[in-house]
Length: 194
Image: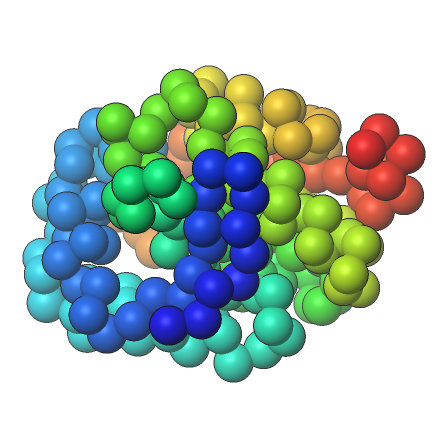
């Protein structure tokens, strides 16, 4: 298990094959998944055979890219995850760029972790690493226009509204046709504000 970074309260580490139950519990909280898949349950087999292998493969690129298990340092409690990966690999929208220097950031935390500043703390650390130590030129994030909690996190970490759009995707998918937003910040803007 490789630790990517630590903040005052958090440790971000690579997922391992032993993390199926952690992910399954997170992805089976109806409220957590409400803006992800409409609140539908996710089978353990899907986590084991699709989600976790995709997360593990995310570490094959540069060292700071991937989906990172996020733990509270004081208790070692699993809070959820944050991702920091090329926007061209987005699962949220059809990729709109092939530029490897544009990175998508995202998060999914347990309800008990909401409202404690964990998502902004982890996101800021990933952005700092990407902008200062890496060659990231822009960070973007996407969510439904109604997901005010994620939008608030985006604003707290310095992302600004770039555009609104309508989700496309597989016909019949729960989110197709819903209004969504993209927030982002360029490296120079972020460094100036930081």
